Image 1 (cartoon, helix red, strand yellow):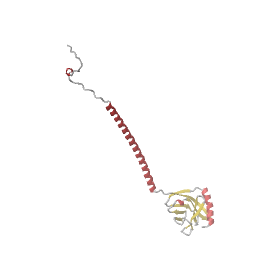
Image 2 (cartoon, helix red, strand yellow):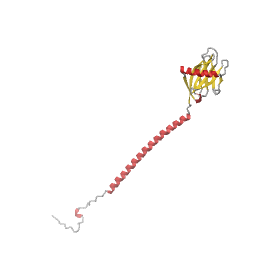
Image 3 (cartoon, helix red, strand yellow):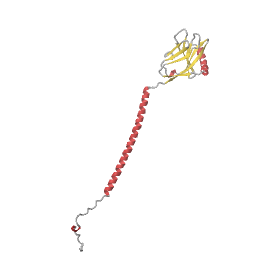
Image 4 (tube, helix red, strand yellow):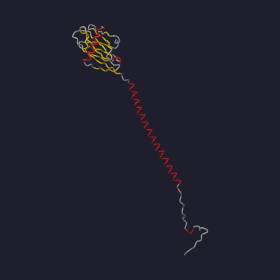
Length: 208
């Protein structure tokens, strides 16, 4: 890859991105994604892909000679990258992307002595959600709900037991009080008054 190509691509990249809107492509980590740009050349020419990270680091990704169907890949992009093109479109396929693949990608068409930037695409790789993590979240949520429910049940039962104990104590006190204050009334004799024994030392007078 020519050094002046990288310098020219960097300058043209900022001009292109500032002047036009780049679009964003989102993909889950571990998936495949294909980036595309328009082939604006009317004649067979060299096409290239570049990547910018954090707006400061420029890296070449790959290039393809119009007379060779096999693309050349720069250091760090030999594995998992595929490049091909047709008359109207240039493709860059990335297999099993990860977070490190995020960045601003753009393709260049070599016209004359310069690389002309055509499209800019921001690749946003999202971390793959772990199925086991989701299961654990659901389980923890269910356990939390169950714990709260059991806590409420224990509190309700404790209040009811306390009330029952209080009611039993008051009933015992009332019974004890009633027992202490209960006095049996003396039974009245059913015999006639004449048959009752006369009390000694008492003088009785009979009247007619």
